[in-house]
Amino acid sequence: MSTVNERAIAEELRRMAAGARPAPDPHTLVAGATRRRRRRSWTLAGAALAAACTAGALVLVPLPGGRETVASLVPTLPPNSPEQLRAVRDCMPEGGPSVNTNPKWRDPAHGTAADFRVLAEARDTYGRTALVGSTKGFVLCTPSKQTPDPPVFTYWGHEAPGNLRGFPGDLAVDVYEAKYSSAEKENYFRVVAGRVSPRVERVSITWSPGERTDAKASGGFFVARRIAGTVTRKDTSGEPERYLDTPPVTVTAFDAAGEVVARERNVRFAERHVSSGQGS
Image (cartoon, rainbow, N blue to C red; front, side):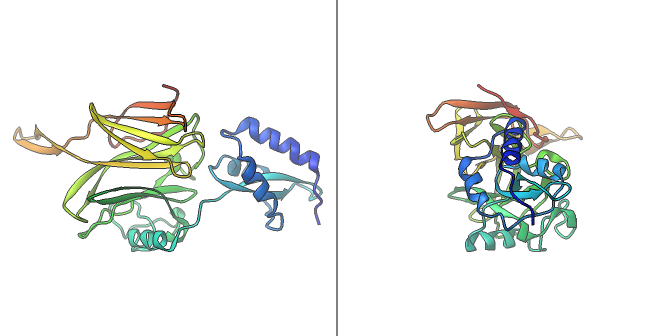
């Protein structure tokens, strides 16, 4: 049986703290240390990847040769409540997320419904939209009486294998797109969702001058939505046509004292957002 080398653990923790943002929460480290029985034979490269994730538990990992152990942060997400579990299953009637707008086209690498958790929700009088994610990626779920939008999968960071904690700073806007719902009334919603650091308490989305929505940060995640307006533009044939109005938005993150800790301006609709807001 491997023995615990406290010096090796301390050195590894210092290395992880220097190379990862943010550093693991001390309470998480203490809780994880009680789980030593759940040891796994991971390579050091795998441990470094795990250390980059948002949430985790401390476990002891055998070093090459099996003589000593070091600490590693294993990616975990909070469990679903029974209601949330039903919501995930309803969102993924084919058993998992879809590759594109065809809900039956799935990729096993994206996982199954059992891998996904409800991370944050935006609710209003018209219904709700949830950010539903795994350690690899996420989907947006908007219940609808008629055929709902398919649960299209996106990797965290927009490339495989997905990097849950892979963003610098305090704010990462992962998606800005439109979702359809007929839960109460037929509407299209502009939806913004992403990740934040532990110091962020609240996120504000400025949809246009004078239009703002606040979203409470939930375990490092947020999602907000607003009914989409329409604008008239000429189509390719020169005829007037109505389109969803989707101007760029500004996303601002606040700490518990109400101070701005990060801001991302000019977030454009349906673009891949892999940068992070830095300061004000």
